[in-house]
Length: 466
Ligand code: PHE
Image (cartoon, rainbow, N blue to C red; front, side, top):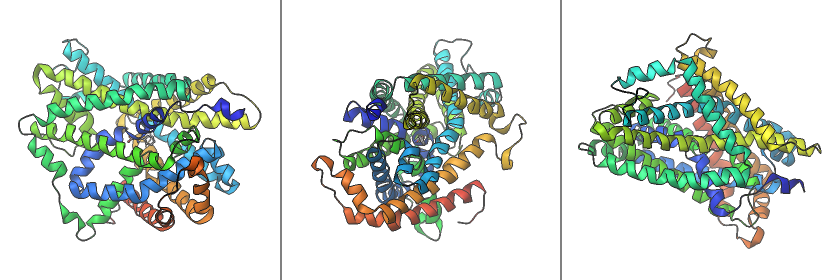
């Protein structure tokens, strides 16, 4: 009875779109193209793929299995395995809660930029106009009223979908949104690669630079690619556990654990094709970090002539879709934990009420990050980081890799293959590559994740270890 109330995906396609929607986010459109460029182009892609095969795949399979087997959201799922693992569940809740603080603000930025480009298309006063994109961006980031306002809109839209439930809200939305994103991206790619001078961008992204394999360079690329992979695949933080808990027993977990990373990587490579050729064609720098998305690319659209605002609108709308489908998954993790915990105690909590309360908490966090204005508004700065970086450090930098590493060790050494097998082989699916999965969970994944963790600490604290 309890389980029936939790909801379930209506179709395989719906589940895949929801999971890919979670995976495809700002990380793909913003992080990946740039990291590929500085990490040795094709060489980075190879390292990324190796990591996805050895680590991403086995962590994904384990998380989906834990979710489906226990039928619970992340906190309850780990507690079901053993009370000793509660801390993993707590990490699985805290990471999304922290990420949502800055993700919602950035999502709000996307709405602002989509609106502004639309304004330009109609020569309205609320467009970017002829403003210098760098000045426009800094003026917006410190504008506390508008940044808080746009964060609010983003959180409210997320909550609206989550309130609809698993099949009626999340699945229904992502089934339309993700194919739309795909086609929008195709249009932007065609424009980008046909710009005069686009070749230099293609070269930046795809040209193999195997020098990264010399000396210790590969460790930094490994850390770069590993951090990117965890964030991008939404691993190590309860999302795939939660989404797996809504998965029908008929679904083949092994196939889905390949399909999701495949789609995610495809979109990331497509994003590289969409972004870098345009950046180079306009003679801009690819290494603008966070500014890449809002300054460099706005410069591209502002210099495209009368067609620019239309592409600008299309592009930022696409990034917004990527961001909101990720934010929906992060929010669902939190909502499902509250609903499940209440149900365990015999109570019944209304999804709408829970979603709204959680939405308000997320909004409070997002408001803090927005008011901070990337550290430019004089708020106290934790450990010397701006609030965005601080929340990112705690979640992406520390909790996600630690959570995933401990999870691999537990599944590999304590629960063992039997645990995975009994769930994966339901409905007669054959459990393939058993030895490979066990070996990866026991040795390869923990070691590689540990290196990623070192790399994250190195980057955040500028240690210069590698
Ligand atoms: N995977 C998303 C991205 O690439 C972000 C994300 C991280 C979403 C963690 C959910 C959980 O941007």
